[in-house]
Image (cartoon, rainbow, N blue to C red; front, side):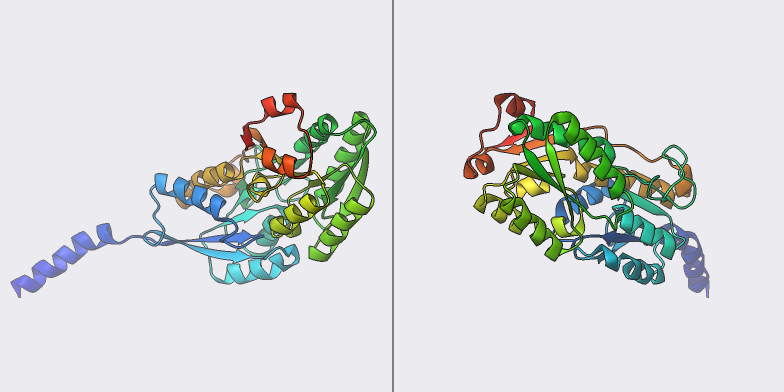
Length: 319
């Protein structure tokens, strides 16, 4: 009887200290976990530094739209039924779908313009259930055009892809067109929403002998990097990607935020929310740095001479 009493007392004392909450972190992504590996590794590193070990005190419930943003509403509803403690999204369409489908706190790994998209009230005071990171696409647009101005002869034409089902892209297009006019370049806009429209945009770029093509981050462009690089090499078409994973796949150039670092920063938001903070009280963070990455080998493959001044300004030149 004495042993039983001791055992019960030990259970009462030790049990609560040994018990550990296992959090469910949902992820609503445009591409597969395998394709998104660099970002996932950065997120896991940030979570580990905050004391979270996958499989021990959290699990990830990953849902991929496989390059089709139209799938986000259904995936968000499915994820909501799993009752996540917090949800990580990438891009405005994913954040909007998650916000509509669930009451769980949402942390954006990126969003071009969350205010214009109707996701939050302001960056400093988001309100509601959403916070996280913005990649400020609108601010980057003019800079990418300026890079092409250094790369192309005067009065050249270039193409740029948008997905006009994304609520921020109409404003983005106006910024690009204005910057092109100021740079003395002609801009051809392509509405790319799927693999078929991407193929049409690539073919039109070659047929119209455009001097270059800017690819914005959308489902179709993210999931077909290898095909884009192969097309660019075949048709000697300079392509400017919005993230360095396009250059890692063999592309010519990228200019944009360090996306793995954005995911690393997301971990701190997840930690604060799991400790009791309200998402709407956490200010949305802007990237501190943008990286210019140039692939010298890709330039050689398409017969393009990169100006020395541009190479010197690059954060990284891949030989």
